[in-house]
Length: 349
Image (cartoon, rainbow, N blue to C red; front, side, top):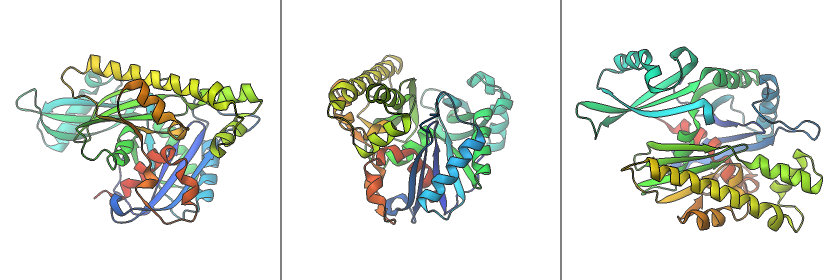
């Protein structure tokens, strides 16, 4: 994957199918970070809500420009992420070679490790250390992103007048902010309740992802139910959730059934982990992030369903305010987790 050296004035840009989220941090490290800018922009319109896949780059670019203006940031340096089916990560075992030799070996054998040819992806790797299962080999994290999806995002960012300084994989951007909460846990899960899908990522105590699973069910189902029940369009439904301003029967008739389904999906993904993981460790805690993580009662419902401690990743809880409107962002802070994790790349050495 195309990485560049970290820069100080970096904005984390979470480009979704229906919304754009932006976070800018300043400081010397994640521990003393300050939020200097943030925004969330819903891209659907009353006449034409977005659905299915990413909008065309020029449409994305228009909304990215609006999100930048809304946030007030002066930076034009962005970090973006690739997630879902367009992102691939896998631990492979190789002979301990020099960095260049290892890169050539991975490129030559890429189709042995993932279901794509080298010319169809961007890839990067990181040596974790000696393999515990195979003597004389090292464990290597192979990270890859589909070129078509990545180039689509890059075109949108550039058309918006921004410089893309780096590209990350969504699970590792989430882990970067999640580690502020799961500091001493030997094994923890991050659940990203997104627009159209819910993802479970399980990490060990070194922050290495050891499992991932996706279910195609996200907040869009909730928005659709609100539209059908109360005669709203997508923009009105989204704003009603943001403002916590819905009819009195919303919780019992729509929200609780939706959260129950989310809890069941997460439980099934956990059971798949336990059945497929062999000797991998038990999950200590689940941390919730994404668009669905700030829905009222979600942590309680999921905890009762899965039988594990469940809490929210609330990135604005861990950072100081450097902007007047931080209080407005605190309600939806879990939905800004990915953008915050991307912005934290500015602290990399």
